[in-house]
Image 1 (cartoon, rainbow, N blue to C red):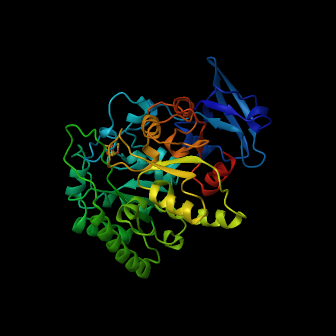
Image 2: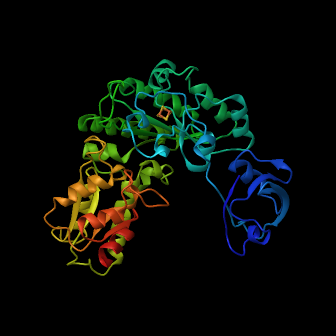
Image 3: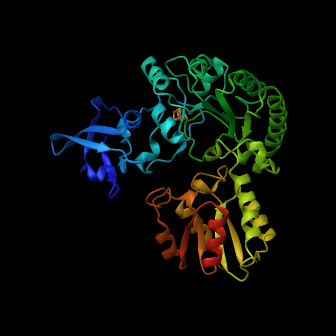
Amino acid sequence: MTVAAVAPRSAAARAGLAPGDRIVAVNGRPLRDAIDFQFHAGEEQLALTVERGGITAAKRLERRGSGLGLELAPPRPGDIATCANKCVFCFIHQLPKGMRRSLYVKDDDFRLSFLHGNYITLSDLDDASFERIIEQRLSPLYISVHATDPELRHALLGRPRHSAEILPRLERLAKAGIRMHAQIVLCPGLNDGAHLERTVAELAPLHPHVATTAIVPVGLTRHRERLPALRSLTPDEARALAAAADGWQRRALAELGSRFVFLADEIYLLAGLPLPDAIAYEGFPVAEDGIGLVRQFEDGFARSIARRRRPDHGQSLTVVTGELFAPRLRALLAGGGYDPAAVRVAAVPNDFFGPAIGVAGLLTGRDIQRHLAQAPELGRAVLVPAVAVRDGDGIFLDDLTPADLARDLGVPVRVVQPTPSALLNAIRDS
Ligand code: SF4
């Protein structure tokens, strides 16, 4: 493991560690990855074996408090386990050529599932990895289920070499006490209807080990070349799904004490239905996957508005979002007393990926630039959602930067975190 950063005056700094050092063992135990480091580095006294410039040395660390002041470098693409699947709906297969290389990494790595909540199929997981998950209690894990019918799942995963049967794998982890979050990418005409009902019914007995089952709609870009024919969910199908999910939730609540099945926000937005109340998300365990984020935002917005003496009238600016959330955001701002002629919400169509992609997180800099260039007025600033730029370096998916956008549009561009208070503060301060 390579040290990425050392906090000043921390235990790691006192031990003389520096960025670039390679930690090869902790208390004599060799490290395979960051999870091994976490697993072995919980003790108070640590003896690290460290390589620097070809020389190996021992470093002693004494943990005072919780942190060591040590940041490890993320795994390089070559160190990540990748999938051998060809899922019919894979988003990576639908990316155009020429984007940055990291976007094409088809990770299917249980370590990233544990550390970062990435979804894994378990289809290539060998016995040693199962044993490691169980021994190191790597829980929760995030599992792409899609269907419990073995033949259907095999087809959805693009007919991989190995059996794709999921239930025995989930049962093995459940028996060992590993907690899991299941996900179903819903492809109309393939794994919906009776198939979906079966999947939900066969996952439910694994609760509470399978803690939640999230249903998300398939995302189809305009770059589906030589890929299986698929279509997007229609608004009518989204409404029918919301009604079915309501029934499953009621039954699960009575039988399991949890609603167990949760729909992606996109499905309610597509259906034109209100989002369920916050209580129905049971603590928002999978909000990062778009399950309840809109409800959190809307409730947080109402609280933030109530705390402010009066809305900041008179600001003239443009707030960028995707087409899916734009009507909701306009309604929220109008309800909060903001003049829609002054605080304008720009619903930016996604030309890059195509009209079926309406979320803000997949907007490119050029689409924002092209759309806003046609606006009669932008006001004093343009606010872009932080979810559309990459963590760390703040670059859009197409490598444009907010500074490029500001230069092209001739107004300041501010990147705003996806929280109500950040948005309202940015409106006030711009
Ligand atoms: S598991 Fe399927 S969806 Fe995920 S990266 Fe592999 S092919 Fe794509």
